[in-house]
Image (cartoon, rainbow, N blue to C red; front, side, top):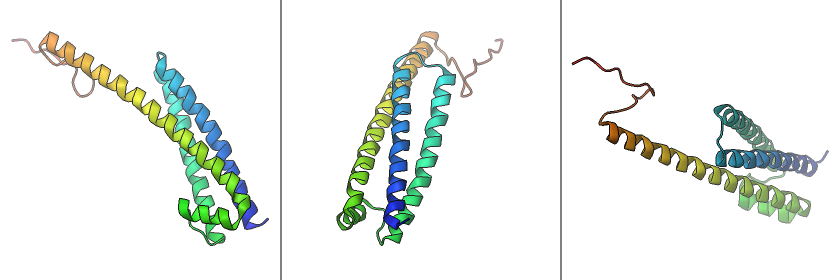
Amino acid sequence: MSHIDALLRCVDEQSALLDDFIKTLQAEGQLLLETPSDEALGTLTARKNDYARRLGELDQTRSQHLAELGFTDTRESIESACVTHPDLHQAFKSLWQRAGEAQALNESNGQILHTFIEHNQRALDTLRTLMGEDLYDARGKLPRHRPL
């Protein structure tokens, strides 16, 4: 197998993995708009972490294949590789498109989470004000009241 073929196989594998990652991010986004259970979010988080690990491993493999062809794993160098080896162009174009979609979905989900966190913090602050005391300690426990 040539270095080009090995690189193409790696990039295709990354694209397929990104497709699965995108589906997971879409499921996460949908779940966040509903009333998510801790278990469901935990499962999706574990799955996302596994995808990130596997994509990282493929990044290293891709970098090695590029080095064997005399290129580095930077956008500029990959674009040069695509000019030198036109067979690479479509595979990398597809990979970059999927990576951009995954990044946008991940950022969107992060915004949803950030909004939930802000909302919950405001609700806790309001309750503290109404109660005139801290409701929970740093461990999420109700404080023990000492007799006067």
